[in-house]
Length: 74
Image: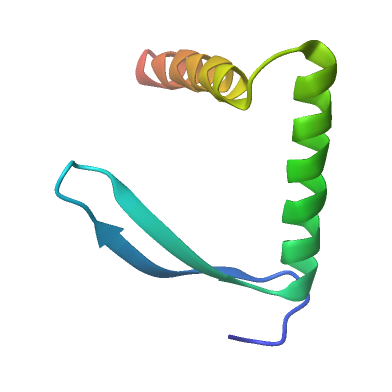
């Protein structure tokens, strides 16, 4: 791993029999701090909105699908 302040690299992918996969990343200290801050912020916002993190990620995936549809139709 390099000494760059904001570095993130895919270190390993493990495929599972059920079709899922586990991804491992090497990250710099700066990226680790950002991930921790954003994760904590997400948990606080979900709690205040009384939403589960799963429902928030599902809503985001709906938006991703809409954007991908727009790109496909260009």
